[in-house]
Length: 414
Image (cartoon, rainbow, N blue to C red; front, side):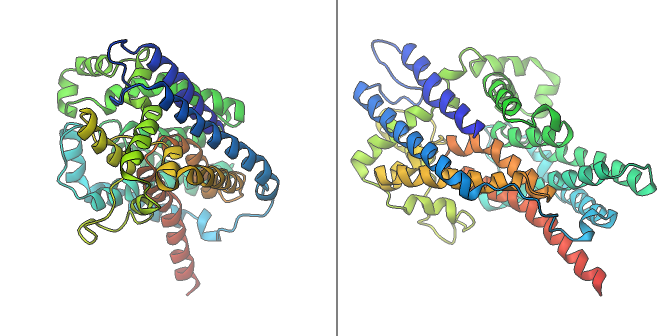
């Protein structure tokens, strides 16, 4: 819930006020170059207001029925806490780093805005599934060590493995190989694992996320969006300062494309006025993200790219890689009905995963916390990327360790 409140406040209240206040009187436009029209601003606010009202009412009504703190013991098998299971995940993590060595070197040497030769499907599997396996393994190691009070050989072995897994994760996921919106949930989840007391309450988490969005994320953007290779930055660190200044810094962050959500709602409404509602077709790009475009040539593009292309053609914009907020996705597909349905489904998902946050299964707890942070990215959109990225993380952090656990359990029973 904290992420939802922070997102709504920053993206739908603070950002629009600052953007409109700083507009030129001759040619008032939003960061996405969509022109300012008072009546369209009112319409966008009406959609946001409707979404928020339905969301909070649904949350309150569903909370008593859905949210239940589990008192049941963990469902995981005995293998889950055995060093053999941890060693297996460590070996898998090492293999992922070794087998993707050339890819990682290319990521370090390639500029942020240079195109990669990897296919979209390959990138999704590597960066959003395989490269997240060490995060799940780190959680399992920490959970194992936290329950052991004596310095046994197994304890020391797992402790060294934990250090190795952290190194693997930092090699696979760092500011030079990954975007800010993907790194944020990962690193904040690490903070939750190792420094739980820092963000273990709603107030602490709210303050941390608010400070992160206003100060830390604009700072990290200078690294994740620097138009230079790792070697170039290493030789000339001043490039980071130039990137920070170019990105607008902290003071001007709300006037940059990072906060384009409000303007994209109006652009989406304008697109609908000329092309009609998607009627669910646009959602297929999210729910069937795993289907290669080569197999399905007419597969819909993400809504962010759809609106981006529209802004390029009609308003002289430069980029097609835009966000498109969750509320806008509902309106794009089914109009006002879509806004209402999306506003009902979101609290249902949040409450379901809130149960996981209090689960005795530590991996469920970790994936639930990850979603709480990732929710900021999901709400900003677009839905295709937000949904597919979370599913990839779910597979890497939760499903793969569970699968390994089941395989080891089955093998040991023979």
